[in-house]
Amino acid sequence: MWIDKNRSWIGTVLLGGFALPHIWTRVIIVTAISVAVTVLYREVPAFHFNITPTPFALIGLPLGIFLGFRNNTAYDRFWEGRKLWGALVNTSRSFTRQLLTLLEFQHDATDADPDALAAFERDMVRLVIAYVHALRHHLRDSDPFEELARILPAEVAESFRGEENVPIAMLQHMADKLVLARRKNWVHPFHVIVLEESLTSMTDIQGACERIKSTPIPFSYTVLMHRIVAGYCTLLPFGLESTIGWATPVVVMAISYAFFGLDAIGDEIEDPFGEDVNDLPLHAISRMIEINLRRRIKDDGPEPLRPTRGVLS
Image (cartoon, rainbow, N blue to C red; front, side, top):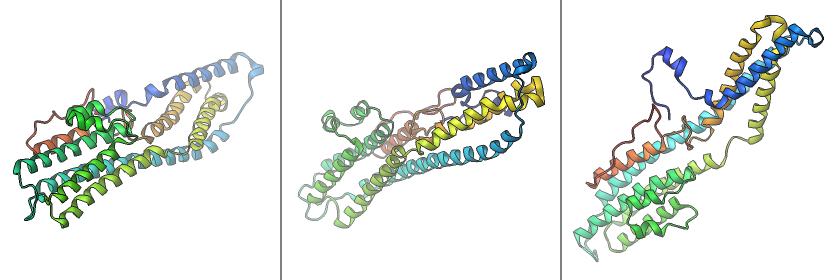
């Protein structure tokens, strides 16, 4: 995610944003076409056929509305993803607090070793940390096992290899460990419900994230927008040349930059869990969760993730 806000207004206008690397070839092609059309209009009279600006004015307004609608839809997906990861931050902190405060020996506990209980609490908190990282990798279709090996014992991390959905397997593993704690009477039956609700919240958050990831904006709608924008910008010089003459390439370049840029922004934020510049900083969020949770169990944690050239991954 682009987070550098220290630039001046002029610096932001001239250097800010990352749409141009995605669209500069399209803008150059359309501008080159407009230059060729302008030259042909001036040098080849037979080529001079006039398309008035009226059709482009009629099409431009609804096209802008449709692009705005698509970008609003993409931003809704982006913002929902951010809210879900905000909920994951709160749920992981709450679950850690519950583990450290609600787990205690009952009067009929079968194993009343304080060290065993403390080790169980630490293992559960580390599982929560590993789950957050595993969910990030799951949403980005990357391999989580290097991260899991850093947090969990080798045998525990390897036990998840081969799972189709590693985060769900980890939630089941945490639930199984809570069952063992209940059987040892390390937790009051009323508190089991509270701990289970936290695991259920994590499951709900993951399911909602998977829904966003697996259900993109309908492809036919995206293709139609791409085609209309491309056709509009390509034909635009034919409607402007007779009115503005040699200024046509400049005006076409400005208008095509606006339309292609809006089109590209919708594509970029449609999947908020990706690794584009404007996608959510899942790595930074998961690192922050790890730092917060490790401090609760007096573990040494990593340093917070810092932005690179104004971009937080």
